[in-house]
Length: 590
Ligand SMILES: Cc1ncc(C[n+]2csc(CCOP(=O)(O)OP(=O)(O)O)c2C)c(N)n1
Ligand SMILES: [Mg+2]
Image 1: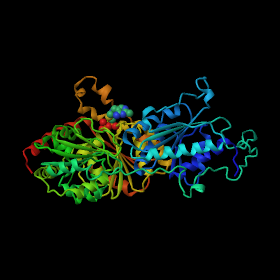
Image 2: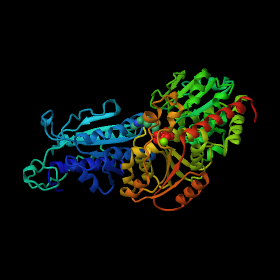
Image 3: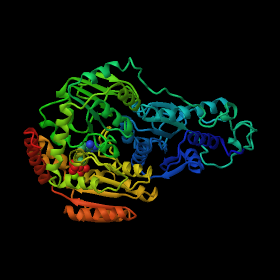
């Protein structure tokens, strides 16, 4: 085996260990210090490398891919400010538990604090946002160092995907020469011509361990509760007067669809499904009562549950969070990672268990009929949709069409601010397999386009992105991935010329509102489509939108469909509808 130099060997071992850990995709941003990583990873036969130019967009692209596939796409960048541009996506990956592997190149240690070019302190750069950090040793063809390197890679990739999935960071210092040129002065030690002795490129464990795969294999238990551990929950379910299951946002539906059906049927508890929970849409919506309109009507309900089983992160809907808070009672927060994602501090019990196993076990523990609360909730749900369908305010109507007309199956990414809220409020459960994603970990409006395109890169489904104009503006650089990663999308840009969401806040009444909060920009996004060679169409009408949207879904390439709306009118309509719904639901009509 021939290696041109020590850095080449080091880079190849890193790439090899990534591939053995099941990594299929990597995202690389250009730079010099990362040359050994870039050369080795891009040349690896089992890794598809995507080259993206702006680290902030690149990192969100990798985030999206990790959300859709559950596998990290390692991110490679050079030293200096480059790795700082990964940071927003690292924060989101941490908060939303998305697998992410950061491989940042660094200068050799003697250059720390020396004023050397492009040299910053990269030590623990992302702080507590990462699950695992290692500064890798300086490359050297020494057997123990190579074993240490492989071990670090195995542990890092496994940690990124564990039950508490999230970002991991390996900082990799390299000294010149960085390029894969044979260099007699830098050949791996003891092998001046670069020819490694037989067996040296190991230590690859499988040869001695009799198995394939990563250097270190990790086995984790499943987080299953025993019958006696489950007793408090089963007792609460049996004695509940009014029970409810709440599924909050999560990238992997938890519990899985079948287990959720079994749980709902055995307990008689209806399901309230966040649009990002993986349970608002899918065939199970025909088997059990899945409620999706709660954001619009829950505050008008006069009854509330006394036992709640909560899965996933905190729901997107503020009315729902408030409703659960005011309900009090016994609330079980199920979290396989033992985290706390419930900011009203109402949950009474933390259940650290695998959601699917727990739901399956509970379903065999209990057998309970639906109570009158279940009837009340499903009646309110039916009344809500029969009242609201077709009456949505302009932006909500577009979002309703986006989801209603999306093909089965399809993947939809929805931006923060009003799009995700409108999805929550105006999109009825559907039996079609819609996989819906958003960035609700830290709820930034940065990196949305890149995240969506990364999600699209991880699936063969048609991809739809629904995005507000400020979020679109924020990540126009992300559009480059359409060509570079060959992802097609239908991008629906709801252009209300600024941050429409601020109309929901009391600041709306202040003089500073327009200039400093809504911030109209007057940008013509058609130019952005021209720059990236995308098709572009603009409309104000819902009927025309439906035509454009359907055409786009049936055609190849990427279309940007801009829908112009008036956010002030939109919010007035939203308020009026809300009042009418409240009257209708609280009067029990329907
Ligand atoms: C990176 C980042 N900066 C600022 C914010 C605060 N913020 C929340 S929503 C919003 C406006 C978003 O506007 P747009 O995308 O057009 O959606 P709209 O409110 O019009 O629905 C802003 C600035 C944020 N969440 N993330
Ligand atoms: Mg806007």
